Image 1 (cartoon, rainbow, N blue to C red):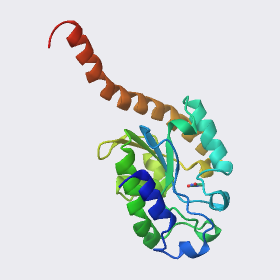
Image 2: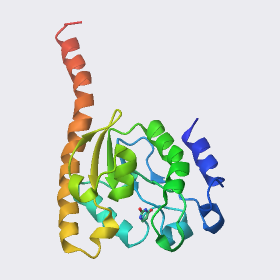
Image 3: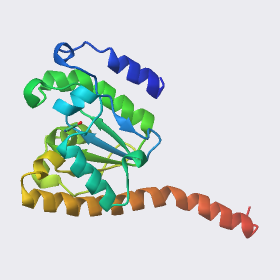
Length: 202
Ligand code: URA
């Protein structure tokens, strides 16, 4: 299945009741060939209207955090646990997460990122498959299935809490290191190969 086929399938999904209240399915945005995938929670009011993730106030903060590690939206991919807005921005419920999960897992499979940054409790629990609390695990590195995972607070939680903002800013600097490590690790063998070739070792 291609990324476009998956997008089309999500656009017409009616598996849960959120299909009745949504304006748009918010599949995701960015570069599907990226090494760095961000996973948020669910679309909010503005995302539902525009069909794009993180376009509201939390999105502006996410852009600033990305800039602080020398990245832009075009360098990464952003997806959510739920592709449709829960009315009134309530928490996603367990049934909705279970029904929507295959879309995110397929996105991960097709993008094949080296690093996943999980934003907030819902994304972190789904990606780590563990009932952890973000306040305990944020900024730490976990090994996933072919990728590294770093959970951090959801940007929306940092909008009104100074201490959370500081934590998220620090976590992003750790993310930068984890990303550098994860991408360097795959480039090294190619470099070694080139050097070996020059030295006539092959
Ligand atoms: N919060 C999220 O988790 N995702 C969005 O797309 C917007 C706000």
